[in-house]
Structure formats: C-alpha cells, structure tokens
Image (cartoon, rainbow, N blue to C red; front, side, top):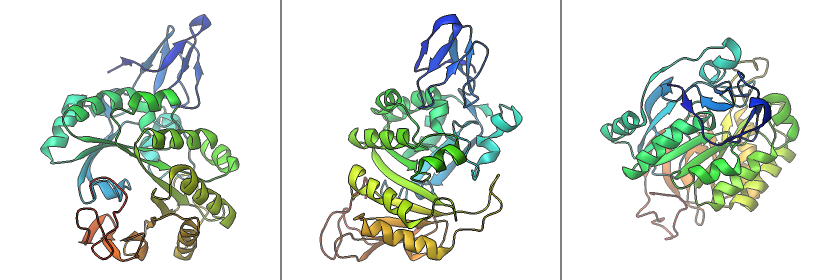
Length: 338
C-alpha cells in the first residue's frame, strides 16, 4: 500500500525535504531518501512500506530491552524493511539493509487495525515498533499507535534515536516508552560505522525525556571500536546528567555480524568494566545484555542494593518487588508498571 507520507515539505522543481529523521533528505522527483522506503513522486512524498510487515512476533518486553516498563509482560512486535542507518555490525541486516543492498521491498499486508487486534488477542500490554528502525515507517507506526492508545495498549519504539523534533512532537501523545541505541559517543563512530551523526541522537533523547516518555538506553560494545574507558565514561555521564540517574543503561555484548566479522565477541570482562563505569557516573541501573545468566541481568535496589528482579536472558525467574517498592528498605524503584 503506497501512502502519502507525513512530515515533509515541498521544494522548488518538484523536490521535497523529508523531515521525519535527522538526515532531512532533499529528494528529487522519482528518487528515494537514504532509508530507501520514502519516495518522491511528482513533488509528493510517499511511504513505500505502509502496511508492509516483514516480521512480527510476541516478545517479552525484556527483549527490547526494557527492564523497567511493565516487566514480565508480552509486547506485540513488528517491523517493515528499511533503515536510515547503515550500521556495519547490524544484527538484523537481512531485513534492515535489504532495500539498500538488494533493492527489494518485501513483506505481507497488515493494517493498523489488524495489529491492534492481534496485540489484544495475545494479551500484550504493549506494541513494539522494532527489529528495524520505526522512524522509516513512521506513518504506519503513527496510525497504529493512535489506535493502540485508544484501546489502552502502550506503544514502544526501539530506535536509533535519529528523530527530528517534529517527529518527537508528533508521536509523543501516543508513545509511552523507547529504548534508544546509543551506538557510541564519538562522531567518528557514527559517521564511519553508521552513516549518521551523534548530536541529533543526543538531542532526540533529551526531547523524548522531557516529553515524559520512559527512556532506556542501549550501547552495543564492539571491541576496539567504541570500548575505551573515556568513551564509555562520556556516554554514562551524558545519560546520568541529561536523562537522569534513573535511566537504565543496557550494555550489550557484540557478536560478529553483517560486515564486521573480523572482531571477536565482546569479552565479558569488558562488560563488567563498562558496568562499573556506569555506576561510577551515578546511574542507578546498569545492565549486561547478550550474556544469559550474568549477574548483570539482575535489577537491584538503588538504595540498599538488594536483588529485586532476577532474570535469565529475557525471562524473569524471581520477583521480589512489592507495589514497586523494595521490601527491604521501602524505596520506590524507577519505571512504569513495576
């Protein structure tokens, strides 16, 4: 279903400027933006993936990862093809990069109404726009999120954070939570390895936080690329100072993928060190991801440090919170639906 796109402006000579992501592509007639799924047709911008789902599943909300947003519940998750980044280590490259690499649009038809009905049928408390980048199917996500909101279902973006202020403002009334990938904390990482810039991500994170959206941040630590103590410290301090010490930071283990096959998996010792850096910056919750069984999957009380939620991978195996409070010292844990 080809559908007129949101958030663009017409320019001279049948050109348009797309304002949904921070690339703000100026697109000539008959051409597409960097994402490969928004196309200019005679001076009008269209989404080529509206209603074209490439993947859907019921996931634990912990898989997003969101550890402080209705823990232990299911999230109906879906995506279209395409991405506005070209991360060379992408774990989902077979669907995120298929338009760029092979020129293919693929998927099956779903309407926003169908997605909301499926979420309700499976007893999901939320819908997650995930697997690829929700910004590039913003129009489809927006229409689905509005219906979900009216049905009492929460909405979650799993995103690279490259949204414009206009996009944040537009989706804010319907977006309840987001996990934002912070790929690193240098311009070099973003430009060389992702085809983007760092500052728009930081700006969007601050905007979403101020808008009242629950935020958790993920950094995939790639050995020799974004793993220096200085870079990790800068990232941790940004999260603590600009987003708040209550913001969970997930440190994920890298495994060779896509175009980055010459680096080893992240040593677990490096994740431990990064976690210590996060705590030293004042963060209350720092987690280790892609290491099932790690102590770094446990949610501890930020005051008395007692374990409160134990996990194995994406599964909760013990839960000691009482009405969102630590049963030992009584402080309230940060989050939604705890």
